[in-house]
Amino acid sequence: MRNPIQKLSMQKRMMLYFSVPLILVQIILCFLCYPQVIRRYREKTDYTVEQSINQTISFTESYLQNMTYLADMVENSWVIQDTLSAKDFGGNRPYFDQWLEYYELNREFNSYELSNSIYRFCLYVPDDVIYSGNHYFFFENSRLKERSDYVDLRYTLNQGEDYVALSQERSGIDKQETSQMVTLYHRIVSKEAKDQEIGICSISVSVSCFQDIMQNANITSKGLVYLMSENGRLIASSSSTIMQKMQRSGGILSYGPEISMEKKKEGQMEYYAVRRNVNGAAWQMISMIPKSEYEDQYRILWLSAILMMGGMIVVIVMISYVLSGYYVGRLKKLKSEMAGLQNGNLNANLPLETEGDEIEEIYHNFNGMVQEVQRLMQEHYKLGKEVKMAEVRALQAQINPHFLYNTLDLINWISMDYGAEEIGTLTWNLARFYRLSLNHGKSLITIGEEVEHVQVYVNIENYHFDNQISLNVDVPEELKGFACLNIILQPFVENAIVHGIAEYSEIESCSIAIRARKEEKDIIFTIQDDGPGVNVEQMQKETEQDIKKARHGYGVRNINFRLKLCFGEKYGVTYKESEKGTCVEVKIPAMTMEEAEEKI
Image 1: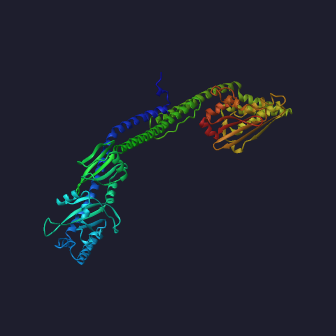
Image 2: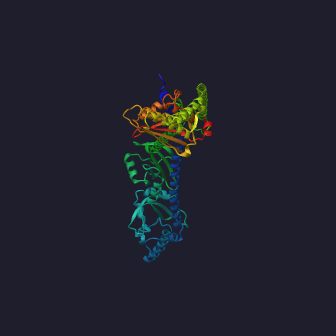
Image 3: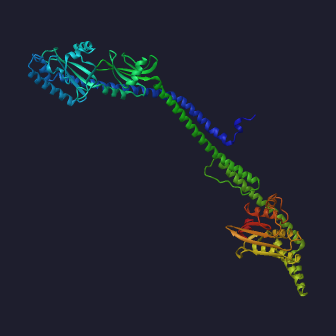
């Protein structure tokens, strides 16, 4: 049983041989490179997350540092120090003094907010001070005590540290408009009496500033970045919706030791987490990326790799198809020319290119073989022609054509002496017919002589048919000097007479027309009669079959064979469709006698 691949066409086999190794190499390379690409991509992703968190922490710490700096600036203000350090500071002073005090403090805080527009300033004063109810820059000390985390606040301030927490503060110029703020509480200490607390100030910034930072730090659509205090309170997050959803599912990562891109599971949720401390506050920045979203990017890489590999396979197959088609096409051309040569086309020739490959070498050898076959055929033809000429010469020697010509001329003159002009004319035509037919043993004759040969033949036949045969010859004078093989027109005229007026008694006359025209480098004769006609396809088939065996006689097949053998496959006899009678074309090259003698 044959291998299935061997049953395929050569082009398909070549395409397989070209494409399959390349595709296998590509698949192996993809499987070898994919883990490395994934590893590098994972490292790059982790690095991006770490850098994003670090940058976010840096921005957050920058806000806290600015708040600390502003709190120190408030503490170091001589206006605030002098006011809060006064011995009689409180509500037992005259109202006028308190209003002057308020004016100075209010102007001081206005200047702070004008130069630091995103921050809100506040000073906590005793409840009995008349401007403690201002609730713009000034608040009662009792307001601090109302906070739920007052104990933690007080403890942190007593330790000499700032306390940072969420609060509801004024968001703009209008003190009625409040929003959630991140507030830094600072203990103001007297410059004169060290460690003596003279008041508390606060610096606030909107939580939205931190939310914007969180949103920029979140690199995934379903991930979450948030700030959490040490006591577990949420400061800000990148998405309140996702935060609430994760809080309900119990998937929030709590405050704890720092971690870097670790895989965690909280509740039913698996994710990759990063946790970093924030300097300046007891806070942590936490980033949570769902495992599904984190690993989806690698599925996209895998899908991209498959699509790219599929595209490359298609390209490889197409290129293999084109290349195999090119080489197989050249072999098919060789096969076609060889089939033509086998069928008798001796003019087969393959175009040579400059590639110089093995197929080009086969082309060159084939052309050489065809040329050698043509040379051998020519030699064979010349050898056969010489044998025939020898036979003709032997026959001529036996007949002694000069004796025949002289005898016919003698009969002509005697008939003229006795007034038998018709006998003389017939004898002259017969003598001329044989002179042109034998042609001194040569196969070449001028077109003018070939036409004359037909005319004298018709003259002779008219004696048989009482001048019922008319011959119309239309051959331009400039064509009569060209060469042609002898006896290539007379057999067609003879066929028109024999198979027309001679065969059918009802036909009373016969009209034959011979025309010649020149087309580029060729001369085409047209022989047309008004007889019963023939089957064109059958006659053409009989004319072309077994032409190599038609070497005796001067029939139509012999004419076709001689023309093709001497001048090439493009020349010969062709039967044409005609409304009446038979139409034949004979094609020969336009050559002088010298050129024709050199050719054959």
